[in-house]
Each structure stands twice: as C-alpha cells, then as structure tokens.
Image 1 (cartoon, rainbow, N blue to C red):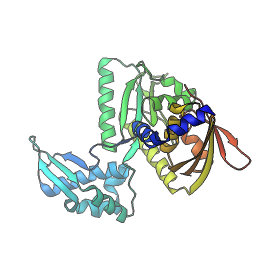
Image 2 (cartoon, rainbow, N blue to C red; image 1 turned 90 degrees about the vertical axis):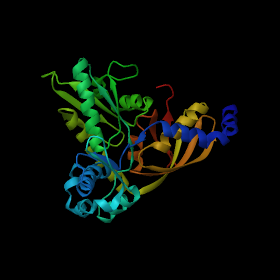
Image 3 (tube, rainbow, N blue to C red; image 1 turned 180 degrees about the vertical axis):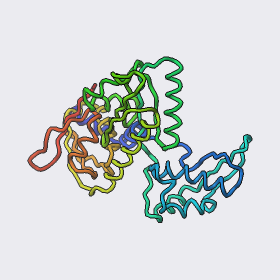
Length: 321
C-alpha cells in the first residue's frame, strides 16, 4: 500500500519523467536530412544532384534517385530549394523545404521514412589503429548517404557487448543497446575463415539480418531491413490492448516501464489505468498485435507471461538487468 501511495504522490511529475526518458533513447533525428553539398556550381544542376541525394535519405531506398515515380520531383528540384549557396571550394550547398518536399514525395505515391529513426549502436571488433579508423570513416560516410543515425563503439569499450553475443540471444544485445541510448545494434566480427572479412549482425526489435562485407554493405543491409520493417509495421492494423506489468517496485521502475512502452515501435498511445502495489496496468494502442508488441519490448527488461482471463496482456518487469 505504501508503494502505491508513493506513485500517486509523484503523479504530477509523470509527464516530465516519461518525456525525459523517451527523449534519451531509441530514436534520433537525422542531421541534414533535407540538405546536401554537391560538386557543381550551376544552380539547376546542383539542385537536381542534391535532390537525388536527399531522396535516398528521405525515402530510405537506394533506388529513390532513379525511381521513375520521383523523376518529376528531381527534374523540378529548384522548386523545392529553400537555400542555395556556393562553398569556398566551388561546390554548392542546397537546402530543401522539408514540408513541401515530403508532400511532393507523397503525391508521387512514395512514402517517407520517419525522420526519427532508430539510433543504431555499431559494435566493432579490435582491428588495429589504422584499420579501425578507416572502418569508422567508411561507416560514417555510408550512414550519411542512407540517413541512418549510428553510434560507433569498440567491443572492448565499457558497456559494450562482444560481437559473439549476437549468437547468445537478441534480448541481451538489445538491453545493452538500450543502456547505451540506442534502439538497435549492429555487431561486427571477423570471419573465422578470413580475419580480413567482416560478418555483420543486425539486432532490432522489429528487424534482423546478417551480412558479409564492408561498411557500405553493412549500412545498406541494416537500413534496408529497418525501412522494410517500419513500413510493414505502419501498414499493420491499430489494436487496443490492456497490459498489466508486475514487478514495478519503485518510481524509477515505474518511469522506465512507461518510457519503454511509450517508445516501443508501433505504439502510438499509452494511458495509465491503475497502479496496485507492484503492478501497473496500461491501456495502449499499437500496431503489430500482441506478438509484435512482445518483440518490440524484448530488450527492455519486460518479459511476457501470457494473458489473463479478461484478455489483458501480462508482463513482468525485471529491474537491474
């Protein structure tokens, strides 16, 4: 009874606590999503070249620059220019009007990948100074091309997971990524047959994949999987759930659970229905069904325990993992 009272006394702080937690993890805005610097000083050509780059990042598809449906947008690129200026090196920086360009893409029958994208925690093996620096530079360049926010870390850094841990289960990897402020992980490890070849494993709540190759192959593969999964989720029907979560023993756990559920992929609305001792009851709207919700929460210390007699989904929060 005392715990429930503590929760209710803290109720006015709830919106602030949840918004602070949610802003710190899972998703990151893409810098310069509507801007590009191109090696051409001609205003018409530079606008079209910049538009090709921006559409790849905006739509989330490598084929967007050559998509016949978007040819008119590229041809009329000057129409969407908000700012165009020459650089000191003879190139041109072009910034497009974001809302106008998004509307044009929609009018062409194509969808835009949500600008708030999962921050991908990229864990690299120890390759040696020069090789590691080169790989980092290639990953950052490829991520900029595709509009994928990434955070690079070495496997021997504090808090990082071993690349081999991808084989031990996705929940532990996702939990580590969440602790690092990310919403997905991309793990690199040297191939057993050839140490010069890297194997990549994507671990995300709604996507997974494995690739062999360099930085570009890793970023392209991860981006393609995340975009495909996001579009499938957007197309899934919206369902309402009651969700009971046991094991919420204190205010930090209360806040962490609400933040986890609120930022889970596919969840669009969360309402607190009741707090009873260590059990929190939420009403939420989400896409992807109960199975999709379980996958989305798999890295957030929330374990499904079935459904109650009245149909409510039941979870247990495991603090300290």
